[in-house]
Length: 181
Image 1: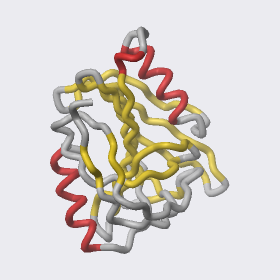
Image 2 (image 1 turned 45 degrees about the horizontal axis):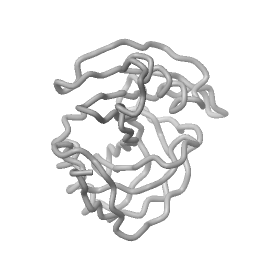
Image 3 (image 1 turned 90 degrees about the vertical axis):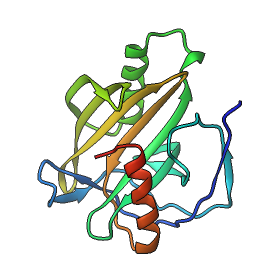
Image 4 (image 1 turned 30 degrees about the vertical axis):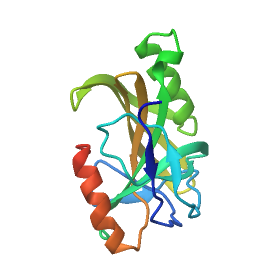
């Protein structure tokens, strides 16, 4: 592909995922979060203009082959999971692709609270808020299913524990560049 970025893994994370509830001060344990291990520099094919340059391969909520960016501050960390897939490989309409992706990515979630189309940074988007029942009670996860050119993305926001404050400053800039709030 003409878009090829060498993405350097700069952060080793061992995190218990926590999801942001309606109250941003409350944090609860997210289901299925797994420990992540560092890797060497890896080359991925991504479209230009995404503003993403630091990714780590891992497993989010039991789904393998997702890409992890940790963003936020030491006090209020967030986790952004990104899965990229060439959408032109499917003849299905975007709305159906988003629905199928939602089902797969959020398969550990017990029930969907809301699902609505929305405009997200001038890209076609499908916004999902889902709730899961865990041993520690109910938790929420928020996800955006984006279409940008020939690529589709799944972006999910959660909040893990993170200790490397120096790395966080760099990752905050990544968050700002893709307008995740």
